[in-house]
Length: 214
Image 1 (cartoon, rainbow, N blue to C red):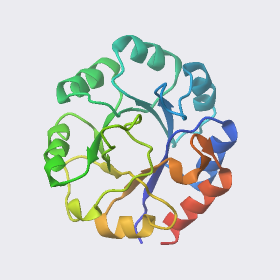
Image 2 (cartoon, rainbow, N blue to C red):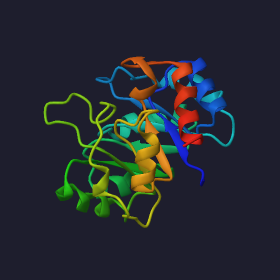
Image 3 (cartoon, rainbow, N blue to C red):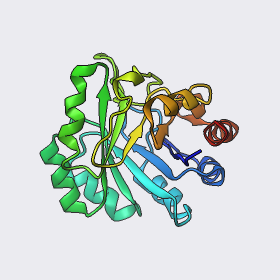
């Protein structure tokens, strides 16, 4: 059984960051998007990030952020990666990568085969891509909605950069998702919450156990 890296996103409390780290998460994610119930302030994220041990990547999720916000964020929070989860163009991705000198992961929403070419467009500029479920047109959030997509759309597909599977992954379906897509990295948020934005240490441990014992 090959190892699968896990990113737990939307962390807001020290005990949940600690639970993610202790359970073996490779990445911890902080959300900077005011509409999200997982939104965190730069100051609070700095406090959490400073306690993350070496070897666990600290990822900031932003949505169509401007340079002023990214300047403040990267100046204050010791980050290892920026995750762009909005409508950022390939040119904007390249610009952010050059300006901040951090690896950039671009999220792309998938609903049907017509969305797949967008993934290819970003593999030339992003360090990683996040293959997520495409939100509905009236959704307030670009991700973290607990929605899955048809995994057969990407079964057997590979890209020239590392990629991460997201979208409605739970302790019950993650084994099937990994088996069908061949994902070596997965991202989750709502599956380890008792309510939107409220993480649970026990659910974090349960999910990680499901990944490790599939």
